[in-house]
Image (cartoon, rainbow, N blue to C red; front, side, top):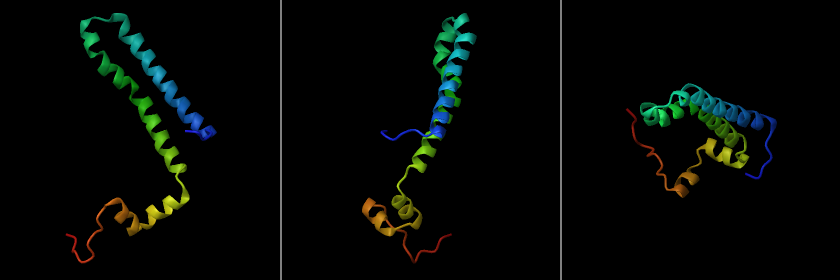
Length: 101
């Protein structure tokens, strides 16, 4: 990733980082203070649930960034449904005479 980050990229990464730190802080404040064997066994699951918002924001940011940084010629080939690309990738073309149910 050698490209410069735009302000919207910084906003997405900052939101994901704040949510991740907030989930960790919430886990520590609620569960670590009263830790026993039961909470110790369940702690990975609880921590994972607390980190779900951060992972969701990061995944959304990453998908949006990949979509915005895709080269234009690749977008036109994908949207046109070019059969040459399908043959090159080994994806069989749909038969033309088949009746779809």
